[in-house]
Image 1: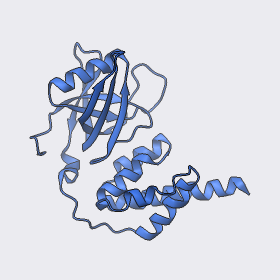
Image 2: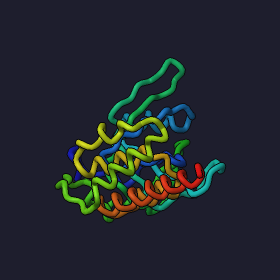
Image 3: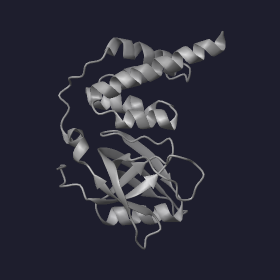
Length: 210
């Protein structure tokens, strides 16, 4: 159960490569394709929920999808003069795709199974087993390349789950790496994987400069 009631079994999905949404994280999106404008209109008229799922390959009009996504609640939206939306999704809970649902809408819908991810709906108790000082050093070094050395200071006061999820969302990783972060079962698992990915990318960039 969420604060606003149970999550619906059937949800609209937005397949978008490289877009990672995690519980508690905020994902800004620009909506301009007619099918996704229709999806946003329908979501605003019902549960205000949209599932984010990565396609397993790019380029196809109806690509195959990864089996795990994250449903987000529309927490901010504005309509532009050109009939486009600027929205923000706040992550609620991950889900497994049970099956795709056919229907008359332009966008895709699936039946979602949340049972493997009930911990996403629980309040973080602040406990996670990872080396926070090492992660802080890695984040500063990693984002220093993008002139964002103050990112850790901005995020470090967040509760542990939001800290890790927010960092995972903003890191410019490859789609497969982002999917691995999404599917990490616990905050500790995700923190350790995040640290490993950051250190791998830092080591790789140092190698290219030698």
